[in-house]
Image 1 (cartoon, rainbow, N blue to C red):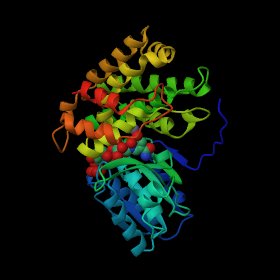
Image 2: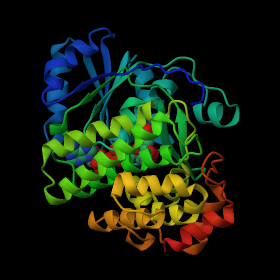
Image 3: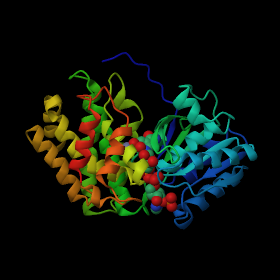
Length: 381
Ligand code: NZQ
Ligand code: ZN
């Protein structure tokens, strides 16, 4: 194990009815003005908005709406939220949505406290926000685990970069599986695949073979696969939704990462693919993962064999990757670039740009060259 310091800032409320029962108490310690943030309108249709707003108002809060946060949230949308937060003297930000709404709010929380351009501060000066508006999250679509960490993934449309930024960690997270009931089937599955990817990307980082965090990561992978299969059979299986909701949080709350380095190369490739195409995050990962793993399997053979045995109950590295590919097909996730919903045509030239601009991770089983990333992407065509 490497040296580590672990501290956990987010209080979690899990289970049916937690918003109704505990939200007033969770926001009681913060000021009066609350920015209530949400996406394109699902929360208005399924009644979540009304429930949250009535609890907030019942708790004496003045509520200002910040809406229309898109999937793959943009830096321009962050600026809109920060202006609202400043104009209304917002004391607390409540993100109600999936990873996109939560991530956008994490950066609004920081940008709302400074006149400095946060992108420039973080990307160019390598400085990080000293002060943030406190924020909390109510998860309506699970998978990213964004509700339990202090990072946010933001797309800078002008610069054509989608990348992680350091931001506010939610003070609390509400996880009610019932709140995910109306999520479209494909989003439920792609969210679950994102969770599986987080655990795999953590596990395949180049660290000691007998790290306790590996055992925990393998357990999360197994549970995620089992519950994805339950949902393939019955998408309304709420026990499976609940398990996946906690798998999602567990995969990204830092527990799997203690004492080890991680990989996350597939994520870096997917994020840049997203910057160019605006594709769905979990679906982009489903396309990239098998090809990436075929390239690095030889560099971490023992870990791949263990993954194959413990997650998919098969006996070789190659059989494990094949089983992962089968799971992707079986779930109806896209397996090729042409199956992704993209705002532009995905051409070899576009994939060359993705390969030339994505971050390269040095702690994966083997550092990839840009040409090899291009090769991997072309194998997904
Ligand atoms: O916008 P609305 O109308 O709410 O619709 C959303 C959206 O279209 C819909 N939805 C959410 N809850 C719903 C619902 N529809 C019906 N009923 C509900 N209860 O679901 C769609 C997708 O939502 P989105 O938040 O975009 O999905 P997801 O949770 O997968 O988040 C994706 C974003 O998170 C980033 C991704 O890169 C992407 O930008 N990630 C964040 C991470 C983090 N901060 O730790 C880690 C991840 O690796 C990931 O990169
Ligand atoms: Zn992810």
